[in-house]
Image 1: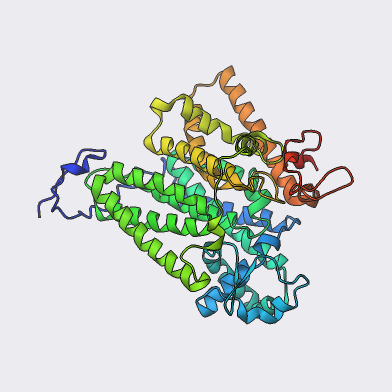
Image 2 (image 1 turned 120 degrees about the horizontal axis):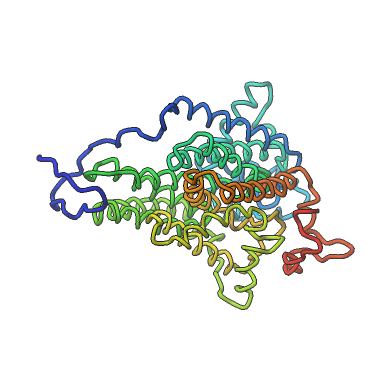
Length: 472
């Protein structure tokens, strides 16, 4: 069959309907700037992952238990039995001080976690790795699972490992855009230590940690797809299908991640019109069939109980919308002000922004609306903007555009002032988030005291600048 050449861009509909995908392979590797080999990048990513894991692992604060009480056990059950039934731990469950134990559902004769099983799927390889390390160093991982709740040390080490791997993968995405190991590494460290990754997702196995890893995986595939040029090839279909399956897994981990599917479907259409859009839809449909099958086997229903909460654009929505952005207790841009730069830059320079960047801004906006419409919008007893953490990797991708512009700006007083402002914003994010990882008092801010009600009773406390959570 003759090869059909297509101009750069999405002119895939010039191909004949009967034309098969042509496997041209990936474009030439130009990700490394002169003097920056892939070996150097791999070494830098490895060092970054090890360093941030060390930082996460040595932080003394643990938020293990509570919402994350059953995730490690569910992952272990998936590994050993191929399901999420926790009945094999019934002796431990029945001995738990609170009966019935929190967040445990009784489905017929099965006992399953209320929270989405997708987090246990993502965590399963890390749980398996932890089990191997424990057993080869003289411990007994299975015995610990059968006798201990909450699994403070195990849960935090697994959460730290997930957060570290997420950081490494994001560093790869950032390098694809910045073409600089130093700048990509600096932003990756800021992501790890200056956001809720440090103060929240590395502190326990709430579903946000696994969800962040899935999100960065989708962004990596999206970045690779946007770099593709020339004829539509099999590699494009593979990228699109893999992204579709990851989005489905993301939905099964954090339901709002379904919105990320809009980004990928649009990018698939832009690259290959109907051909890749259909590939994306087909892979998504297959993934959703699998999800429904697992839900029926696990819960006896096609939809998970956790996903039945309805969003409401009610009286609390305006407050929730603002609180998720700028409140001292839950404001994303208060806890990590650096993130405002990327989205603001893209909005102001909308005409110059790429399609990928515009779609990411749209996704951030849709996610903000979704979590603000959630009846429990203040995210319960937590640290900082937990519900907004899903979009943090996208905001770092958007941040690369003003960073590239700043790098290209000649030395001047204005450039120095901008660099100083970026440094201050970065240091502030590191200060409040690292501090939260080392002081349990930040988490205890949520509980009732002599002067305050519990955050669950008085969610308006998120606006209290006289007692901000980040300075507890």
